[in-house]
Length: 327
Image (cartoon, rainbow, N blue to C red):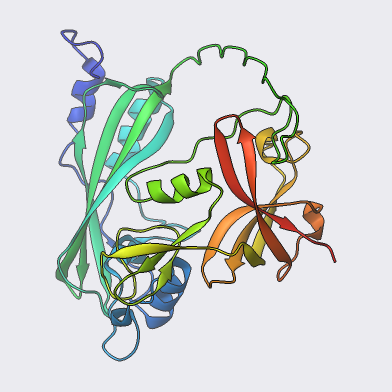
C-alpha cells in the first residue's frame, strides 16, 4: 500500500535521483569458475544432474550470484551511490532492512575457467510503502554478469528499507482445554512455534504430517526419492511423482546446538534452550532437518540412531521430530 498519497514526498524525490546510477564500481570475481566449487554447491543442494559433473560440465545456473560474491572479506573497493542512498534512508529513520525477492536471467552457461566480471546499477526506488513490517522504500539493484567479457546473466535483488511498525499488544492466549502432554509433546504454557510455510509444492507433505505420516516424494519416471518436496526431479527433470511413507528410522548426519537467541517453543523444558537441531539421514536415503528430543543436547552425536515421532507443538500444529537414544 502506498503511504501518503497526494502528499509530496521530498525524500522519495531525492531517492529517485539515484535510479540509473552505478550501485558500486565494476567488480571482478575473486575466483574463476571452478569444478570444486560446482561440486560443493551440488553436494550442498543435493543436485546430482549429470550436466554439472564430468567432462564438459557447466555450473548450475542458480550459482550465477555465487561467482560475484566477495566472501567474508568482501569487495574492498565497493562504495559509491548505493552507500549514499542507504545513508539518506538511515538518516531519515528507515534503518531496518529486509530482502524481499530476487530475479535471475541466464544468457550463457558458465564453464570451469571462465573469468567473471560484473557491474551493478540502482534500477528502481519505489514510492513510500506501508507493509506489515513498517513503512519504507523498496530498492531494486540489477547486476549484469559477464563471463570472458560475454553477457552471462542478470541478477535483480530487491530490499525494503523501512521504519519498523510499533508492535501491537498480543492478546493473552486462552488456556488449553487439555494442557497435559497428550502423549505427543504438547506442554502447558509453551509459546506457539512459528508456522511452516505451506504452498502448492509441499502441501501434501504437511497433510501427511497432520495424519502422522512422513511422506517422501518419488519420481515416477526414474524412481529417485527426494526431500524436501520439489515440483520436479533433480535426477531426470520429470514432473511426475508419487509418495512413499518413511519407516521412521534414521541417524544423525550432522547437528548444531542452539544456545542463543532463546526460543522457548523449541526446547523440551520450555525455557528457551539449549536445544539440538539435526540433519537426519533416513534409512530411505534422503535427509531432513528436525529437532532431536529425548536426550540432552550435549549427548547428540553424529551417527546416533533416532526414531520418528510426531509432536503436537500446540493445538493447531503437528511436527515431525526424532527421538534419540544414548545407548
